[in-house]
Image (cartoon, rainbow, N blue to C red; front, side):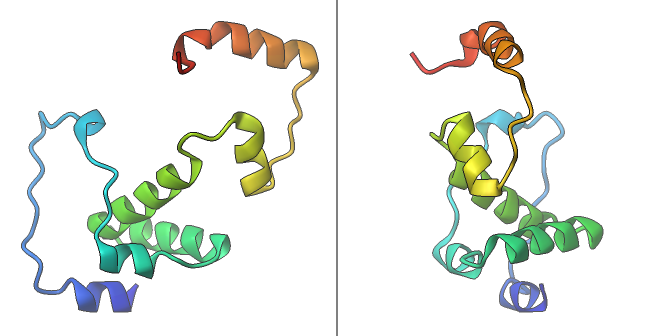
Length: 107
């Protein structure tokens, strides 16, 4: 976290417009930040937690974008495998969830 803050110490302060639509934000990450975030999963989540606790919004954004890019285009099963999440849904529950959310599937 200190390394990140030191690198970005001279960056201009970004003021977010309250009407800014968060869905329009880019998932692009600057090269230095991308290399900084190339850590194991445990460290990545520790960085995100620290950024949140210390209210370092740019670092929190980069961490969240990194996680978003990790899961982009993956199936639920691939995401479970990536994060070691156990699927505790019954086949019936899973079918119901798929049916309720089929509008969100890529066409």
